[in-house]
Image (cartoon, rainbow, N blue to C red; front, side, top):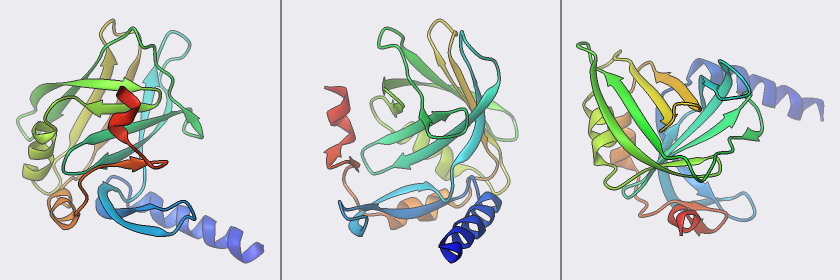
Length: 185
């Protein structure tokens, strides 16, 4: 038991040093084994902050998943196992700031619970990540249309995204044996 806890602690410490970099990962099967379905994600989760009517600048963990068809962010409020909860009434938008000249672009987002999915063609975000230069920071602001709820985080260096994306071979995200699009029917 002590070895397992020590291994987990070492893994968490090592993972913290590589946060915000990308790699190809494989979805688990129902027995936590690896499947052949892959996605591109953060090697670890990203850190950010969120604000809403109940809190201001609280800690946030962000998981990022992208396949050839879908790009998804999953938010965990209070930097833990507390999935973000959203109002189905609100619409969300993703504002990005990137490049040395601080370009800005806006991308519509669909949401369901703690999942925020890039609406329509995910290539806009993909191209920004793919074309970023080593060391370029990309800042994300995901906010509700009334600006009551805001999620903010940054990727300090997305230069590994292009290779990881090229490596992955999946055609759709599966979570608990459902395509991510199943959550939005």
